[in-house]
Amino acid sequence: MAPLGLTRSQWWVLNHLYFNEGISQTEFASVLDIEKATVGRLLDRLEAKGWVARKSDAQDKRTKRVYLTKKVQPTLQIMRDMAAVTRDEAVRSLNKTERKQLRNMLKRIRDDLSEVTNTNSTSELA
View 1 (cartoon, rainbow, N blue to C red):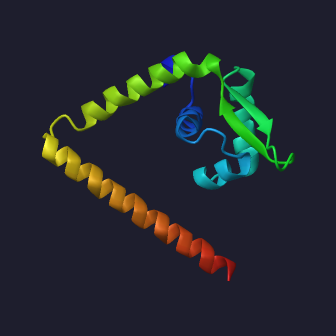
View 2 (view 1 turned 180 degrees about the vertical axis):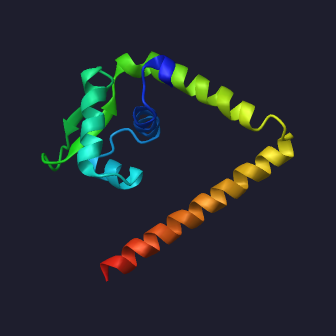
View 3 (view 1 turned 30 degrees about the vertical axis):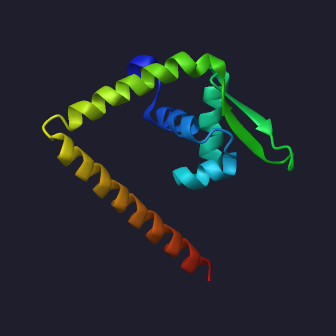
């Protein structure tokens, strides 16, 4: 994403917002497993570019929700196109069935890791 002037972290934030627009900064930090201050700095830089906007939550004014702006849409489309090309190149030697199997296995691994992480977080609180 360097040709777009994006760091890997900024790409990760924009991509996550694409699927979870309106997420709170606190939820964002938890999902990305990084400190709230780090998320804040990343959002500050993206906000300075005019690519994201933070708005107070309607029910809790202390909570800031994060949204993509219209200005970032062309960049977002280029990002998504570049990611698709990279994904296709990464699995080019796999046939359609193998790609589907890989996708299913990766989903299972992700779900298992998510479950383990949630279990560990819960047990640490006890």
